[in-house]
Length: 158
Image 1 (tube, rainbow, N blue to C red):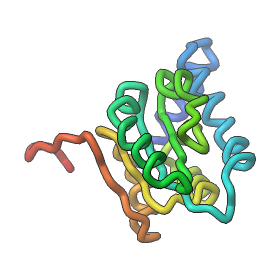
Image 2 (image 1 turned 90 degrees about the vertical axis):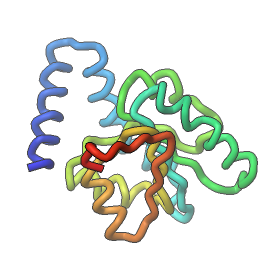
Image 3 (image 1 turned 90 degrees about the horizontal axis):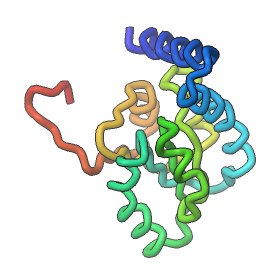
C-alpha cells in the first residue's frame, strides 16, 4: 500500500509539473538528472557516507556534522541528497560534498537502482525523512542508518 501511495504521489508531481508548476517541474527534472549525476560523479570503487535532507532547513541542521566529517576524515566520500528544490537549488554546488543530487521517489525500482549506483556505507537522515523502501533495502544490506536532529514522541509511528 505504501509503495502504491508513492507511485501515485510521483504521478501527481509529474502531472503538476506538466501543468507548469515551477517547484514540481524542478523536482521532476532534478530527479531525472540524478541518474546522470550518479553515473558521472560516483566513484564505483569508493563507499559514500550518505546524508539526506528534505530541504534547505534540514540541511542547515546537518551542516555541522557534514563539515566535521569532511574536516576530520577528508578521505571519506560524501553524498548529499535532497528531496525538495528548496534545498537542492541552493546547495547543488556545495563543495564539501563529493556528490549532490535529488533523492528519487521511494519506489522499489528506483531505490534498488539508487543504492546500487551510490554504494553508501551508511545513511544519515536529517530530521524527519523516513522513506520505507530505502530503509528496508539498506537494512537488508546491513547498511547502518542514523537519524539526527529528530524528535520522537510516544504517539508517533516511529
